[in-house]
Amino acid sequence: MSSAEFTQQFESALCSNPFLEADETLEATVEDVPLTVRDAEAAIESTLRDPFDVTTVRKHSAVPGEDDDVCARIPVAIDLREHLRAQVCGQYLSERERGLAEAVIETLDDDGYLRESIEDTLRSLGLDILPCAQELESAIKLVQEFDPPGIAARSLSECLHLQLLALPASLEGHALALELVRDSLALLATRDFVKLGTRHSATQHELLVALGLIQRLNPHPGHQFSLPTADYVVPDVIVAERAEGLVAQVNPAMLPKAKLNEQYIGLLREQQAGSHAAMHQQLQEARWLMRNAEQRFATIQKVADAILRRQRAFFAYGDVALKPLALREIAEEVDLHESTISRATGNKYMATPRGLFQFKHFFSRELATETGGSCSATAVRALIREMIDEESANDPLSDVILAHRLTEQGICVARRTVAKYRNMMKLPAAELRRRA
Image 1 (cartoon, rainbow, N blue to C red):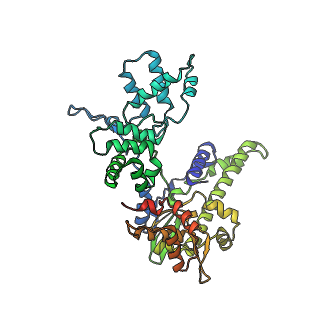
Image 2 (cartoon, one colour; image 1 turned 120 degrees about the horizontal axis):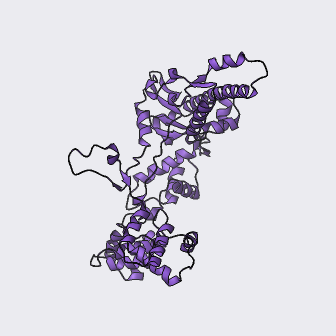
Image 3 (tube, rainbow, N blue to C red; image 1 turned 90 degrees about the vertical axis):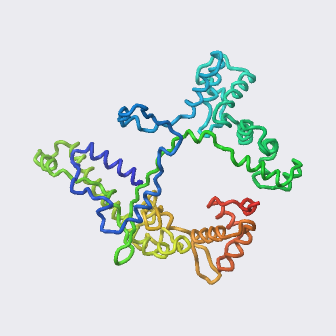
C-alpha cells in the first residue's frame, strides 16, 4: 500500500476494533527526529501546489467592520459551465434554443473542447425531438461566441481560429495568422518557414509576426476555470545529514500511533473459554495488524538503508552518478524475496537534500560502456539533458550528435535510444529547439 492507503486502513481499524486504542505517547513528528531535516522539509514543501492558484472570486465587504466572517474570505472557484450558463441567461433565446445551448455546454470537456457527441447529451436529458444538424450547428456557434474565446471548438485549429477572430483584425499579422492555424498547423509546429513561406507567399518576417500572435493564444481555454487538486506527497523515509554522514530514517509521522488495549484483552481472558468467538477474532486481527505494521516499516527501513549504501554518489552528484541497480540486488542484501522488495518500493517516497524521489527512481537498468564497465539509464538521460541545456540555441544538437558525444565518453548508446530517452524527458527534437 501507499502511505495514504495504509494510514486510511489503520485509522479505520482503530475506529472499529475495540482491542486497538490511540497511543498518545507516540505523537512524534518530523521535527522530533534527531536529524538535520531542513533540506528534506523544503523538498516536501516544494511538491505541494497552492489549491487556490486559479481564477477565483473573493467576497469582501465594502463596509468597514463587516468583513469579519472567515467564510467570506474563502476563495470560490469559478466553474467553466456555470460561467457559460450565466452568459446563456443574458441571451434572448427560445426555450428550445436555450436547451440546445445548455446541452453544448454540458458536453464540453475540462479543456473547453467539444469532443463528445451532443446527441448523447440530449438523449440523457430526455429530449423528445432531437435537433437537426443546422440547429446543432447554430447552438455550437452561439456558445463559441461566449467568453473565454476558443471555447466549444472541435479541434485545436478551430480553437486558435476562434481566438484570433476575437482579436482586432487591424493587428499586424492577423490575416496570415488566421491562414496558418486554419491550413498549416502541422508545418507551424515544425517551424518549417521555407514551406510556410512558399505556401502562403509570406516572408520570414511576416511569418514571425504571425507566429508571435499565435503564441499569445491559449490552446486550453477551459483550464483557467479548473481548480487543481493539491497533490500532497508524504515521504515514507527522510534522508538527511548527521555528523557521521547521510542517514535514512522512517518518517515518524507515518508510524501508527496505536497500541493494543490491555484492559479489553484482560476482560476477554476472564470470560469462559470458547465464548465470544467474534471478540477473539477481533483480538487476533488487532495483533495481526500491529505485527504487520511493524514488519512494514522495518522492511521499508531496510530497503532505504540498502539504497543509501548503494547510491551514495547520487546524493553527492545527482542523477549523473546514479548507478545501475536491480531489485534482486537489494533483495539479496536484506535477505528478502524480490517480490517483497518490489512491493516495498511501490508508491513509496524518500525526502532527501536533493529533493523528493520515489524509491523506484533509484532502480535503473544497466547500460554497457566501452571500457567494460556500466552506467545507469537514468545517468545517461541526465547527461543528455545536460548536453541539451548547454547547447547553442541557434545550433541545437541532433540525436545523432548526442549519441556520438556519449560514445566519446565511453557510453554505447544508439541514436534511437537517445531519441527515446529525449522523448521520455519531454524534450523536443533539435529542429523544434532551434530559435529563429
